[in-house]
Every structure is written in C-alpha cells, then in structure tokens.
Amino acid sequence: MFFVEQGEVRLVRHTEAGQLVTMFRAGSGDTLAEPSLFSDHYHCDAIADRDSTVRVLDKAIVLGAMTENTTFAIGLVQRLSAQVQSYRRKQELLAIRSARDRVLAGLADGWMTGTVVAFASDLGLSHEVVFRVLSDLVRDGQVERPARGVYRLKRTNQAAS
Amino acid sequence: MFFVEQGEVRLVRHTEAGQLVTMFRAGSGDTLAEPSLFSDHYHCDAIADRDSTVRVLDKAIVLGAMTENTTFAIGLVQRLSAQVQSYRRKQELLAIRSARDRVLAGLADGWMTGTVVAFASDLGLSHEVVFRVLSDLVRDGQVERPARGVYRLKRTNQAAS
DNA sequence: CGCTCATTGTGATTCAAATCATATTCAATT
DNA sequence: AATTGAATATGATTTGAATCACAATGAGCG
Image 1 (tube, protein in one colour):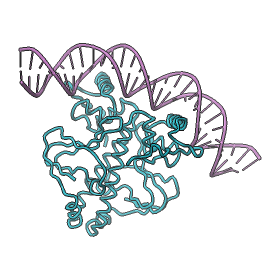
Image 2 (cartoon, chains in turn purple, cyan, brown, blue; image 1 turned 60 degrees about the vertical axis):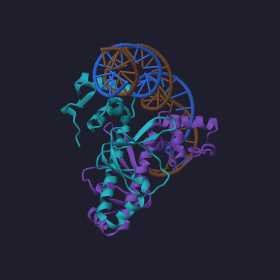
Image 3 (cartoon, rainbow over the protein chains, first blue to last red; image 1 turned 30 degrees about the horizontal axis):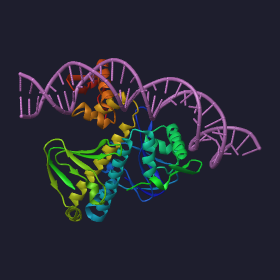
C-alpha cells in the first residue's frame, strides 16, 4: 500500500488487447492500492506523470494500525467509500451511449483537467470523437474554449449536484 | 446502510437518458450502501429481484461500532476493498471495445449467471449483439450451450486468474 | 387450457463511433 | 536553430454495435 505525499500517480492496467486503462488517480494525500492489504495476487502498474513522492506502507503495519487506531481505520473506510462512490459515478457515466452526452457529463463532473487525450481515455472514447464533439459544443455555445486545448462548460449547464 | 440477510438486492441508478444501470449486486451476507455513512445526498435505488430479507443499520450505530470494535471496522475495510477491486475489474472489462472479446471476458469472470438480457446489461451491450456473439462462439466451439439460455465457456479458455 | 408476457433467438438496416489519414501548433531536446 | 515528439484539430472512410422487426419458446396465471 502507498501514500502519495506529492504529485500524482495513476494506477493502470493493460487489457489483453494491449490498451491502457486508468483505474485510479491518486493525488497528494491519497492512499493507493488499498485492496492489496487483503489480496496478494491482484496486479496493477503505477505511473507517475509528474515527479511525485510516495511513501511505501508496510502491509502488516497498516493492518496493525487499523486495530490500534480507530480513527485511522475510519479514515480508511471513508477513503474507500469515496472511491466506491466515484467508481459508481464513472460506471453511470460510461453507460451513456451518445458521445456528445458522455462528453457533457464528463465536463460537468470536472474530468477535463489534463489533456484532451487523457480526457478521452477516461471517457472510453477515441480522442478524435472527443475533439469533434468539443468543437460542436463550442459552436453550439454550450462550451467555451479559453485557450487551445482548454474546454469548460458554460454556466448555463453546470453540474446540478 | 443495509445488511442483506437473505436473497439478492441490486443497487441501481437511472441515467438522464432513462436507462437503468446496476451499480452493485449484494447477496446474502453483503452490506449495501456503505458510502451513505459519510455522504448524505448520494442517491441510488434498491431493487430486490427475489424475495429478500434486509436489515437496516443505523448510521450512527455503525459509526459507533467502528470506533469500538476494530474487527468490525477491518471487516468493513475488507468488504469495501473487495468492491473497489471488482469495480476496477469491471472498468477494465468495459474498456474492451470488441463485443466478442467483452462477452468472452464476461463469461470468464463468471458474470453469466442469470438471464442473457441481464448479462448483456452488465456488459453494457445490447442483448441482440450478445445473443449473436454467443451463437458465434458456440458455432466456433469456444462456448457450450447445455440448455436454452445457458452458456458456459469450454475448459479450453477458462479464466487464468 | 388459453392467455399474457418475458426471454430467447435471428435477420435487415442504420448510424455513429472507430479508424485511417493528414496538417498544425507547441514544448522539450539537441 | 533545427529536430523530435506529443497534443491539437479536422476530414474521409469503414466497421461494428445499436436499432428495428419479427418468430419461437416457455413460464405463470385465471
């Protein structure tokens, strides 16, 4: 198990077909690979896109800390719950068939942080379609593009939640 | 938060487009809606396809139990970790573009339990394509169909993990 | 038993996302 | 300053999953 002190680390897996799927993005203060506490053979790779500082937490020590320090355990439960929630939200989003609606939902959820290519990958769409949809949305006035490669929803249809 | 004593309860959400997405299937002994412990406004619906018995756990009591009983807290962490793992696996599976490969992966992971329609919904595919792919796979000898609506991978390409 | 309804299954057609191709911008490197 | 490589962007084409349409089977029910 790992603790990200600085930077950003992505947990990725390779499908049989060879494509890279990002499982989780851990920022400063996040823990990584909690499931490894209970299962040995589950394998992911970790990629740091920026320089990052990561603390390695020994499995036995973490398990020990959970029995002794209840606030620690509760914190862990809380972080895991948040992860479960975000996975559910992602599932819901990926269930949206139309590329346009999916891009809109992704924008509303604040997924468009890095590059468009990364955004497209998170959405499970080809970057070409995402570029095209973004262009259309800008043309339709739903989205603004303050700079090259930067897209933002207009206040008109911001996230409700 | 809920505890499923008997039966099976599905956690579902409705997308804006009106389609139903199954977020989680809880069987006997599983807990449901753990994230509700920490957030108030997240909303899912629960559907019992079979008659089921569910125990309602009071939020405050569960939080109390976590501080007092460390084994309880650890159990919760463990269940949540397992959920996170399965969500990651599902993400990986849904990232598979080809319907044929996705169906194969779903079969290998033992998702084909109920009806083909339910299976298709879990895979995020139309049931027509799933039927077609299953037919092809039977024709190709990769899959056996012991009875109408029952499909099973042949030992040749069983799950590696 | 006849009725309804969901599931199973297949065939034909459509449509939209993937793919292929290509140009441009820009930052990092040499 | 020239070179590489990645991201941005758009256009043309293909492909495969969705959709529409329609049978057949089988379970539940009055």
